[in-house]
Length: 211
Image (cartoon, rainbow, N blue to C red):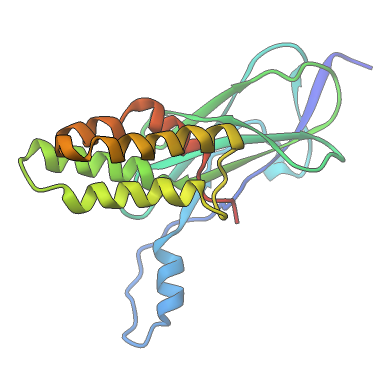
């Protein structure tokens, strides 16, 4: 067996965004689905559109890249998914934004063997909320409703449909308790606590489940 590590690539939610006129009798459900579109294109490490296995060297880090973009102005996030062939469930490696629509993630396959890889992307509702509330606060606008929205996003992540692990759920519940304790100190103190970088990282991991 060679020390080359074959890996099959499979795009997730791939598609082409097109701006087309909306008919007056368009189905509202279809319009909502269209507004939530994400495109994943220009995938690296694939041969003939993923029909054949690509290869990387076992034990060496490789960069996996893709162009990821969406309609609208929401912040998006992405992850590289991988698993050995025949194994249930994917492991994830967070992807980072490079430039324009290009995203990348580095991963090392420790041993030779066949693996499947894919890419996932989603709208990061918490990061979008964070960006908007900080902009409003800097402009001197009221942020009382936005603070409530932020709490609801965190509560959803810790609820029955949330994806937070037990450890992350405990940490997020502590954030909510801290927000309660800061209520008497005004909006600025609550804003600082809810928009902390650590809270954002917790919320990235607690994103909605993939569909």
